[in-house]
Amino acid sequence: MATLDAATLDDLRDALAEVEDKKPTQRLMAVINYLEEDDATMAEVAERYGYTGPWLSRWVGRLDRLADEPVEQVVYDDPREGRPSELSDEQHDQFVEVLHDSPEEVGLDAPAWSVPLARHYLSEEFDVEYC
Image 1: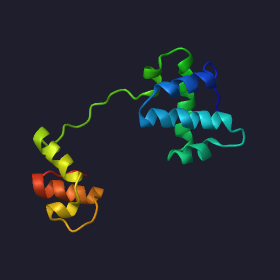
Image 2: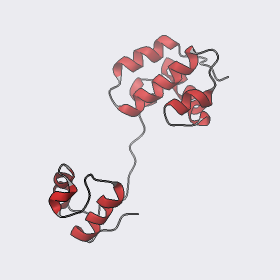
Image 3: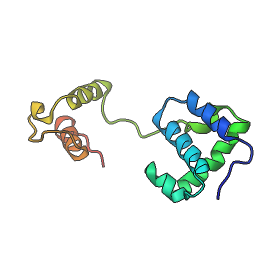
């Protein structure tokens, strides 16, 4: 069983009160739930959040740093460079606007957007291919 060595449950709860984003909230809640539930396994608790036991084990270890480091450095991911967008800012804005409407409004035969349908739209409208 993974445990906290330096941080306390109160440290985790204090951090939870400070965060606003979904992922940091999930990370903190998963670790808090795991530590408070004596009979739960890491895999069981992690599954509730859509993750695996090893994911939860890493976060128990990382959140233990809350005893010595600021919340922002522990619960948030470091910014990562992604690949550059193939859409211009104007095309991106247009795409976002289209997603707010039904696909039928742009001539597609579907009641709601899906990832494959959005890819199709990007390919047809902007000649851009995403995997």
